[in-house]
Length: 320
Image 1: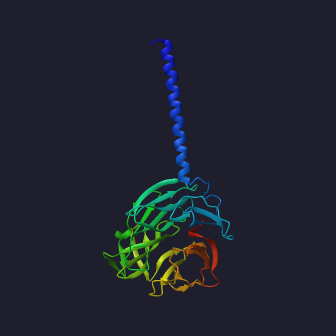
Image 2: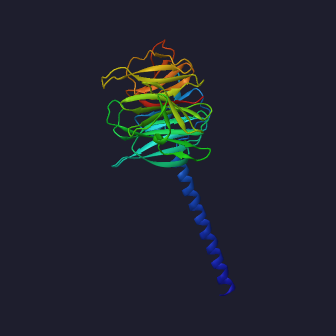
């Protein structure tokens, strides 16, 4: 090969490599835009703001707690959403039979960090205050807690170690002071304490529900009280907000209550409608929850009146 031919081969190779590098860069950028939702919504600078799933678009949005119509949408598509610290959790259902879903871990810019394929229908999502511990509940069968024909699968993910508990049903359970085994045990609605070790959840067996306190390091759980569903731990870690079954009417079985963990005394809140949600605490005194396509707020001490926070919304989250 002549010197001139070698030169042309070298020039062509440089051009091809440059074009390939450019194409790779564009494809990588496209993946980043897709994973973050493409609208610039982030978790930064958001204390005092309410994040919700917009029911019209299915996307996560943000608004002021004091302005129900101030929402900015355009976040990721989610069926359930929760966020705390630098981490968000998005549960996403995909069409098809059987149902196929994903737990998507997001960073503070709502960019995807990890995706876990799941069977079933998204139901509950929680992130610990530090952003290190995540939990989600899926309906394996059925789609409502109001009947008896349902089964759940609840998982816990530790982002510090990457360890994933796919199904909590194997955790050693103490019920009425004794180690308990039963094939019908179901867990749902995990809520984490500030130490990222202690957690609370609902366990159901033999037609009854219980509040359990769990220990991640010891991998154990003990029942504290009967008739507690979908617990939510207050920011100061002293109280549990939960839904309590008060009626056998399948259209209105529950009422929201708050439990003092020190005394184990409970009281109802001013919300009298039957709420099927795992509430969030907007601060140490106030609860927020979804009902009939909107997000509402009520004081945790049982006083005051119900207040509308967001129309056309579910999955409320407030960053502190």
